[in-house]
Amino acid sequence: KNEVEQSPQNLTAQEGEFITINCSYSVGISALHWLQQHPGGGIVSLFMLSSGKKKHGRLIATINIQEKHSSLHITASHPRDSAVYICAVRSEETSGSRLTFGEGTQLTVNP
Amino acid sequence: DVKVTQSSRYLVKRTGEKVFLECVQDMDHENMFWYRQDPGLGLRLIYFSYDVKMKEKGDIPEGYSVSREKKERFSLILESASTNQTSMYLCASSKPGHVDTQYFGPGTRLTVL
Image (tube, rainbow over all chains, first blue to last red; front, side, top):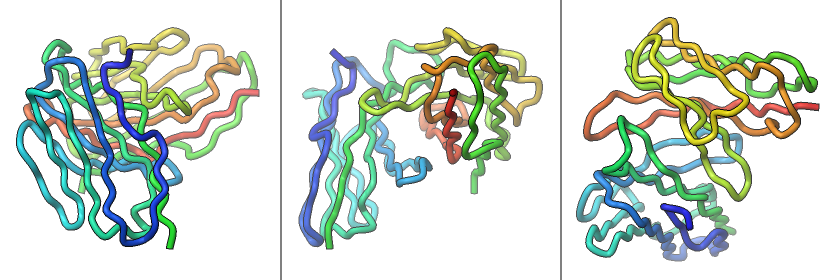
């Protein structure tokens, strides 16, 4: 079993829909990251969470430390949101700044 | 803005060749990482370095080596490329600390024939 699991693996939505991507992890963590990867490879960091909730534009990320679960929400989705969304955790048990990554969720938003 | 650059976007090599992938960052970050990304497997750590001349094995170091002679540059070396090393290779850097957000390069898609 992977330490970080995301669901769904693939998600197709219509423009304007509210989208949720889930991330569950099995280890104690000090931080959780949400990343976005557009076609062509480049990865950018969206959020770093250690508790609660963060919002940036139409993106909202939440984390429940007790349940070892995080969600990424996209409100009023748009075709330019189409990308792979990756959850990554910094485990309390690993040294340095290593992250453990989920497999990613491929999101496609159709016009 | 942090900038992480990689020497090539696409690379085609033959089995047995020695391959060098270069990564340069301009933000004076101590930490640098090399990952490979394969469908269904996500990002897997090959090696990372937390200072000049320092390196640690990641989860899949076999068949790879690294070099960090200068703080801004981290090289990944495939001593004798094999077809199972065909993959997307991503470099990242970060400043150590609580936030430790990693900044990624654009990736190198390596094909070994």
